[in-house]
Image (cartoon, rainbow, N blue to C red; front, side, top):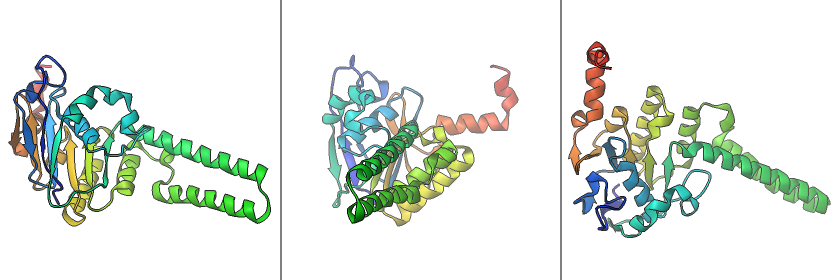
Amino acid sequence: MIFLQRFTLPSGSPEEFPFSIPSFKGLKSLDLHQPITVFVGENGSGKSTLLKALALKLNLPAIGSSDLEQDDTLAGFRSFSEGIVTQWGRTRTYRGFFFRAEDYFGFVKRLRTIDQELKGDIVDFEKNLSGYGLKVAVGAILGQKEALQRKYGDLTQVSHGEGFLKVLESRIQPEGIYLIDEPEAALSPQRQLALFSLIKNLATHQNCQFIIATHSPILMSLPDAQILQFDEQVHSVSVEETEHFMIMKNFLNNPEAFLRFL
């Protein structure tokens, strides 16, 4: 499903961020043709900048320690994001989220805070209630704690990559739009393949739309994905045409040739 079909960017001074980024010069709009869109490019090329601004424009909830409107790291994107104009298909979804690899630890921290707050509620109830009222109140709190445990397990007892995938699997719903920034930072190649399978299944069978910024040739290879490369301009490429794929392939085919110049 392609919910978001097109978005138009505002104009601004080429001396000001983010219009100073080369790929943004002359970039007026982008059309999304596939349920999976992949942004690729070098560090600083603008792919994550655009993804963050789009997440703000869509008012997506964030998986992290704070919501997007309270995230100070996104302050420089707000005015730019407000000028983005979105065009939806026949159906617009209000399901979805924005997730950065670095937000995972913030999310674990948030779960810990919720758990401590629930424990505090139990203590307060035990001080102020008794009998049946206490039983009902404590039972409700314990039910919330058990629901969180069933959904996420104990994320402090698993690796970063395992927990990252668990959170994604637990939070994604059918017919949603999901913006994910450089998930490979948390994942081994094997875990990237697990994420590959998850995204492929959700896009094909659960009517989900994904926009992903990545350096991973594995994730760039998602079937039928629209790959947009950010360099001097933003343009469509095949996975084989990306610098990431070519460098990785050439290095693995002949690492000695690379090592001689390093």
